[in-house]
Image (cartoon, rainbow, N blue to C red; front, side):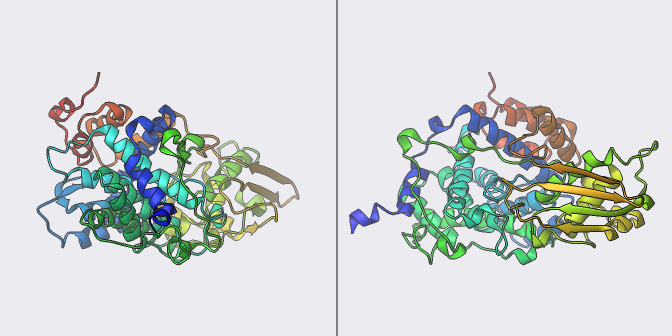
Length: 476
């Protein structure tokens, strides 16, 4: 019985989560994860301006606790750590502006809000360094990536459930268990508890409910680790069983992690996609293809001759929840191949402002949408690794223009430059924070592995503008 117990995938995960150390992190993993952290903080800060964020804040304020954590962008009130993790996680995904990995999931938003909320309520003697954050964050990202690879089905854009609600919840539990320094048995229990919080149907894509999936993943993972720290027990083979995590996949094949002696991180092998505008990742192929095509059509005043356009054909994979011919809300527009094509054609690019009610309801946009149809070529697979977008525009005189995008700028094969990543962060964060706090976060994340006390990050996130905070940073 003991032999069987120590030979399960669940036991292996518990041992590795407990056993990974900062010395296992490579320079490339540190560099990539710092980019993910900076981007996640930026989109989360911007997301605090959204209607869905204000609704979950209003709800969460009914809870009171002596232990409290920062709500990003707010210096006027705090929340218990579970609800700080929840609302900050909702903010991260409120505009669908957060990072995306392959197999498909949004990895960072489920983990970072939970870690930062927890870090503020740990005992004073248990100082939480930047390296502690990086290690726990990467454990949470790694667990998600490994779980996604237990299924070939997961390689495709999801149809039935939203992956962050499943693997994100378990990744959050793994990350917070690591930060709490739980032993291997309690790490394993945290995974089991988290699995019972997991799952959300894709039917709520393109609604205000979808951001709750990330918020819940952060909160429930943190809660699972806290319960496991009190020795709450779950199924000791939760990752091994069809009725465990296998309940979410028809082709579930769990595998052991690499040994600690020569651990190899998935983030070393493949970067994440970081978005340039807030919408479903598939629309980024569309935007790049259309932006290339637009140069064939623009007139001297940089406008597109709408009346001369007869038909627009967008060739993309058959992803039902991103097929929205006439979106009526910002959330529907973020999940519409057609909206991305027509907005990029009209404006030359897509931005945060593209999803305002005023822009969505433009008559000229609606006219272009009425001329747009989707086609789904058999070779265009619904996978963020392999999909492409081809756009054909036919004019009234019969002329046809065509462009194709195989890899958009921001994809892991074509990552954003450091300069463009920081520009995105600055644009997002400065809409909420002072210039001093915005620059402080950039400097802190740049030097994260050297920071002695991560309190500085939370101080900047709530908008503290004091040089006292900078003095807490231990830089060479």
